[in-house]
Length: 224
Image (tube, rainbow, N blue to C red):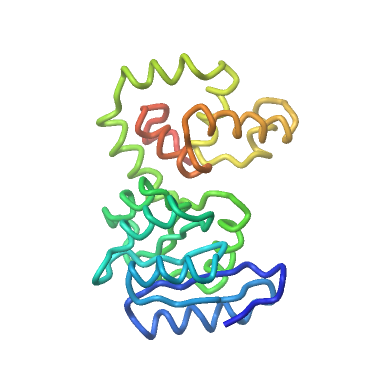
């Protein structure tokens, strides 16, 4: 498999041949997306990433040999590829562990074809992809066990404006929406997000969201 320069390079990982083949054909039909590799388990996924240097990895969670969580952790640590987790159920407990392992979002396997294409482009662009149902569960799960001590330490590192931005990011607001809410330029929002990621040692926006939930910055009723 090869791809023209400029294409979003994708590796598809799923232990079901039909699912893997279907995703490959569907994504390969898009003019700006090229499927450069396939894998049937986590170990093969790591090999494919090392071989093809993809922009995005579509990662199933429950697989033999090595599951998607461990594969995600290793891929995120050793490459610049962004992982988009595939799951059958939106309340799958493994989804949360995958996000904590460094995944940039998740998508249900029964989502419409357009959603898969949009998700790949979204994640490739560096944005997070979290569905409201999982976002609510993340809040409920992590606010119940949030560390007050760690929350205080984080607040000491963030400026008041950065704290406001983090709250809005964790509620699913885009940079443009945050800019409107705080009456600042969108470029200023991007700068704040970058600084927050650095201070919290977060790889991307998704990691900021998970961190905000763990720290109790938002409650279940906050998410739209």
